[in-house]
Length: 357
Image 1 (tube, rainbow, N blue to C red):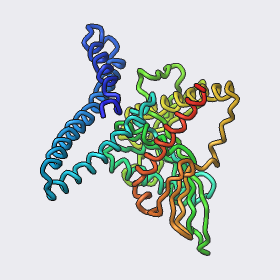
Image 2: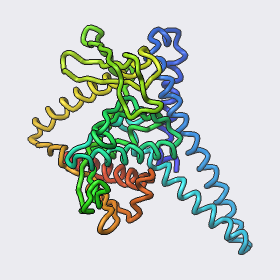
Image 3: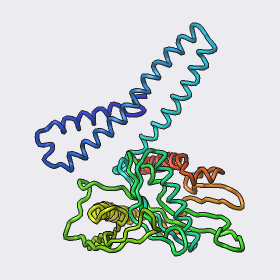
């Protein structure tokens, strides 16, 4: 089990970071020091469950040896149940080995944008927002709506959400792409079947030590917030729009309690968007150098949710599917996330193998 989870490498990396943290100059750069301490905590959190499961496996091995010498049906049933539980925990822990990307451990920023489908698409955007909020709640993650543009009749034209939790981005990057809904529209008096599309974009929240916005490149504007009402109403001109002048990229925040808080969140989102923009530019250059053409993302659906005439949610990349659409819309998407992580790792391994060959 130690070799499966590369325990030796993790311990070596912990020792390296521990030595770095003990240096007298360590806190000279507070942002970098904080990032190092967070990485140290993440690595320790990865080792602890591995060592715990190894101890459980050793204990179960002892029980199996005793059963070989003297079989007892009741003890055998208990050991069998413990083995099944251990296997499940090992499988869940194995997922962490698939979350080794540069930003996988970061918080995530989701942007949900309605597409083709008009009012239906705006309603579909609100359904997806609820799905992700439910998923975050199940995980014990913190989720916060940072910007919203209501639809004309219902739902959202666009909505931005910050999800804070360990490996939030690594898990949610599976959701990046176009999501398709097929159902009998509640907004159609003739009860016809409609198809609508929503684009979900997922970005890692970047720390200042990872990407630094230059103050001279940012323009800050205030405006009066709008929204659906209730707790999100902001009647003063405290909403903030931040613009990255070189790229024209913008980010807004209107749901915090003060202008200062709105500015802080808007700048976090802007930094993530700008960093993602430059990352994608680099990826595009690499594709062009390799002679690859990336498919257009809009219209390139990754998953379909069919409510009528039958019920089915199917991921078109992994072929993972379920007929329990309502459970999925209640936030039970871990099966799709796990299938994507394994599919993506397999695809990456195949590319590496062909490159080496």
